[in-house]
Image (cartoon, rainbow, N blue to C red):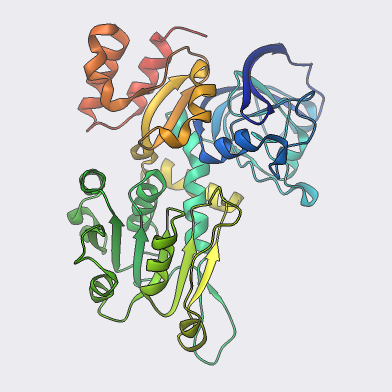
Length: 420
């Protein structure tokens, strides 16, 4: 079977190509990939090429398929897995396999599986590590976004706290505690607000900061103070670019004692140092946003480490349990990952989008692999309606859904967009 895929040959060398997939082995599965969400991690691996820890050194002659936030349908199941999976099943994949201690992952390391392809062969280690996950949602984009949502879930589970006189780490954020999300209205920050309000271990206070009023206003329209209150959470949005909204102001919002859990969603030195400064006793700082600079550093108050038991954790991805929780909450309607999506496009848009990702504003860029369509912002659909009946109809659907991508829009797009 032929597949079309975006493959990595070296630093900044991505190519959209068509090639033949071999017949699957008894321990493999053939799958059709419908959607993939482009992650900043794909940008990093594409810029670094073989120097990236998950990318093989021989990609110049053995290129790998990029993309690791994908969802699709199983087409053919090898006999080894026939009792567990069947053709037609929707699936999502946890890319962090941790197979025999290796960092190899779909979307980074394999020549025949990655999210930016029409068809892929799922290798046996994905099933062996229980990382091929059933998806029950009505839209494929939910399965694609399960991986980034699981990173958020994992961050909340990775925080820890202690009690005086005990060396036991109690895992997870403080229930009914005081939480702050700094630089918290980007795509991952929005997902974190959603999770914080609707998970089973909610804070009583949630302070969300950014330096842009427009981004804060959009977040406040998606997750209102009233909705948070109905879920038992006092939600406050703060623009920290204003001089009066300094460290002392933030600490006063938490009653003057500081926060139990502080998440940093941008790898910016002043933001990290602000997070450290607003920690309360036994406060946990989660450095969520991975930097591209291997020498990135920031000051940390070690007086407070010693006398106030402040501490720091970092998470890079969620585990399979986190992903299962994400899929379950989405299926139950408790989480709406569509709020993270700001752009859509076809497989032809992957190369340019991936290599220029830091320069494209907005949130998640969602790719539909079987269509040909240049990347377009949801906000631009209406202004370009005259150019295409497809844009015009999508603009109507998205507008009727408060500007948010949805299952109806996905179904219309897949049925009417030109095939690649």
